[in-house]
Image: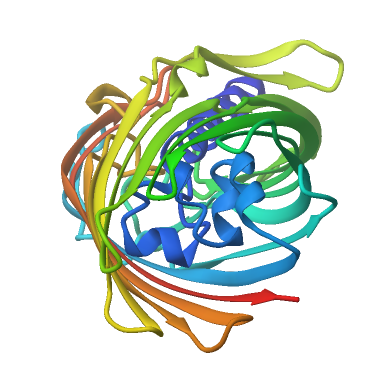
Amino acid sequence: MKKLLTYTALGTLMFIMEANAAGFHLREQSAAAQGNAYAGATAGAENLSYAYFNAAGLTRQKGKNINFGGTYIAPKAKAKNVYNHTTAARGEDAQNIVHAAVAPNMTASWQINDKLYTAVAVNVPYGMITKYDSDWKGRQHGSTSKLTVITTTPMAAYKLTDKFSIGAGMQIQYIKARLTSGPFPGGDASIEGKALDLGWQVGSMYEFNENTRLGLAYRSKVNHKLNGHMKITGFPERDIYAKLITPAMLSMGIYHEFNEKWSVMAEYQRVFWSCFKNLTIKNSNGTVASNTKENWRDTNFWALGASYQLDSQWKWRLGMAYDQSAVRLRHRTPRIPDSDRLWYSTGLNYQYNEKLSFDLSYTYIYAHKAHMDTALTGNGGQRITADYTNSVQLFGLSMNYKF
């Protein structure tokens, strides 16, 4: 019985860990790019924050520069028609499941000479916080999740010709997770783990002329091995580890200025979430405690945007995007009530003087309604169904300074 309860908890927590990684990629790394719904982010290079999307754009940042800011992420998620088929119990609607958070970012750059440019960036590219009430009917599937990924990226760019630049960087990625559930009546289970691992990124930019440029960038996946421990009510604490992958990404963007007033941009990104084939949790001695077969799909992101120069100091941005979810119906869990999303963005740039500027942006994300029908395997596994409605508001602010 003790072994059965332990394995049930492990299986539950595996759903938690995998779901967090699959659905909460934080695109919010630039208040300026957010104003255009990240259209043209790979080609824009309008200020230093765009280097996160394509290091090659550093060659457009002359001298010494610094950019720092953040995005306040205010999600709204509600679970309705909650029903536990195993216990034949109907639950109350769950409100405010996904909690608000701030995603900070900072980049500093140095021009070495006419050809070589260097920079270092700190970003939070993945993260989420979900929490259900204690009377949540699906607590066996998950009650609280907190995942944070901090990436430090030293990078460099080189101008091969007047029109063509290349860039590269190293992703130094730190991940920390805390996950809880209720695997059996009156019992609680939790997993805490962390890891530090490396990845890389490359990019290129071709400037057809002073008005048109094209960007292409690739970020590698990062293979993490989380070391931590698991606690279950009534049982000794045990050391465990699990492998977790943050996915590779391929991005393409274009930017074009029609005249001194109007510019347009577009973006396409492919996120390779299909790297989640299996998720395995092992005991400290290397034996497999539990293994779950996964089937996430690669996703697409499309965006179109435009900017209008109001006067010598103010620029207005707007954009729309379609963001595909990695989660299929049969894999949707209470940890990630995710679905395809539509982005509507606007923003302002204020050029205070030649050295100092500010960016302010707002985005409303409408998520398609999502149905969940999930069950845990093994004895005691419960089947839960629910209907989710989701939306997100993003408020971005950043400052740019040229030394």
